[in-house]
Structures are given as C-alpha cells and as structure tokens.
Length: 370
Image (cartoon, rainbow, N blue to C red; front, side, top):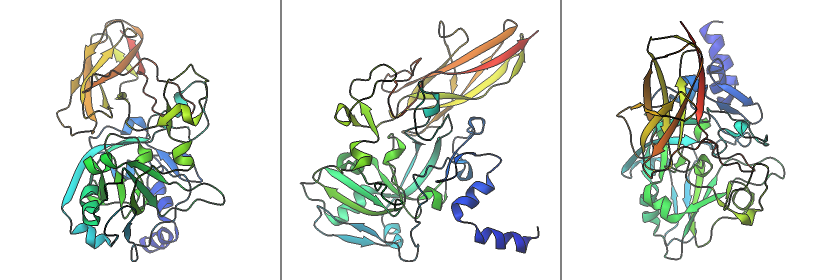
C-alpha cells in the first residue's frame, strides 16, 4: 500500500481503532465493544509507559468532545460559575505528576472463583507523566462555598440505551490536595482514547476516579449518586471468604490502590551457577515503595532486590534482582513489595465480588539445567 492509500484508509478509521491497529502486535485486546486493551506484562519495562502501549479502558464507545467547541463548565456550590476553554486552562500555572494509573479491575481474571467483567490479567496498568493544571487552581477561580465537601465529575461519553451514565464524585479534600486536570501525557497532547482534551488525574487512587473527557466539575455538599457510586466500585468493610457477596451498604467506595509488584523480565531457562537478571515494577496507593523482595522457596526466605532510583509520589519503582541458580529443575521465583506505609504485598489477594485490586504475590517459573 502506498502512502496516499494508507493515509486515506487511516482517515476513515476511528481514532480509537487506529490506536489499536498501530499496536495490534503488542496490545492484548480484551473485547471489541467497547475497546479494552491491556499491555503485555513483558513490555511494561520502562519507567514511563509509552502512550501507544498504555492500556485502554472503555465502558462503551465514547462520544469524543469537539475540540473546537469544548468547554469546561464549573458550577454547583461556587460563587462564580465558569466556562473555560482549553486556552483558558493553559493560562493557569502548570502542574505535573508522574504516577501510576491502574484499572480497579486489573487482575480480575486471576481471582477464584471466576468473576464477571473485563478479564484483565496483569497489564491494565501504566506509569506516565501527566501535565496540566491543579484542580485547586481551577476551583479557586470559581470560589468554592464552604458547604461543598465533594467534587462531582462529568464526562462527555454518553452510555447506550438505558445504561446508567458514568457519573462519579471524589472527596473535595482529595481533589484540592493533589488532583490535576491533565491535557498532556508523557510530553505529548493527551490522546483521545485517554480522555482528550482533559482528564482527571487522582494520584494513588484506582482508575475509576480518573474521569476521561471531562466537561463539567461541580462542588457539592453530598457525594454523587447512581450505579457507579452506590453499587459499583465499592470495597467490603469486612472482607469475607471467596464467593461471599456483600450488599452495597456493607461496602465503602474504593479509593487507594493496594501495594503490588510484578515480574516483567525473567528467562525461561537458566544454567546452574550462571547469574541471570530478574526485573519488574512495584507501586502502591501509598506515596512510595520502600522495598521489593524475591523468594525462591515459596516465601520461606527473602532477598532484597535493587530498587531503581527514579521515583515520584505515587509513581512505580522499577527493580532488578541478580539471581544465581543453585540446583537443576524447575525453580519458582516470587516477588513481593512493601510500601512507605509499612504494608506488604500479601500471598493471597483479598477476594471481593467485583474482582478489584488483585495484588497477590507474583511468581514465574524458570527451568534450570546443568
């Protein structure tokens, strides 16, 4: 196909589909309607996950905002309602955060018993540099009333038929603390599939809070209501055994991510006495990771991995471990992380009926020969 024919074809394909076509040999498509794609674990080896490798999560085929007419409306409990263009936002002081975005259901397919929903395994996660403006600076222009305790968020994506809209809210204190309205991702304009022109960045919290295609902010006294607040994205107050189902009132809204590490690089085969490098990443809803450990005997003993020096609050830490096999046979290497709050990754993840926040120890097998 010559260049002219290729450009003509590309122009006829929706942007979200073109994104997947460009990465079809690398991304793992979970379903076609809507588009959901995760990153193969072995490709999550960079400190900043490339935009074209970053996982895509969609509840339905979105209605993208018209960039020429897009406005951010700020209303609710404010003294001065606003209607801001992207140019207006760009005049505010810039803010930046390098932090992990993880779908709340990342790892759902690894829970037992099997749960409904997108069957994510390991790759619905990435670490990116987000740049935009602080939510606090935007709301300061509107003058938030003292009655407001929650920030209601609305995107442009309309659900099909009678499906409930994806309306969410977060505590106003969190929004004012460190949340960003981002219009850049890894130094490039925010891609449409990731929420352009503006998406919300909520450092340390699961991805259900990271509203895409934001068009309206409303500080309000009470939290948002609806399916995606009252039923979905909730965590048991007192978790039970696998298979136990809780009522919405027996759960709280899901917020911070759990401490977690994954092995991304390990050889399929190794030789006795010859060192090999094991690598991976670790992150948490706590501000930082303090250590990663590796075990080759199912957790009886642990050895410290080398943690990469690059980090920022709520970003992931890359790590490496130089392992020398000592005996022939199948070896199992296991990783676990500890965060700055003192929490350590558990052997088993907490089972919950929606399959959220899977963070059990991650293991790989290596065949060792003489």
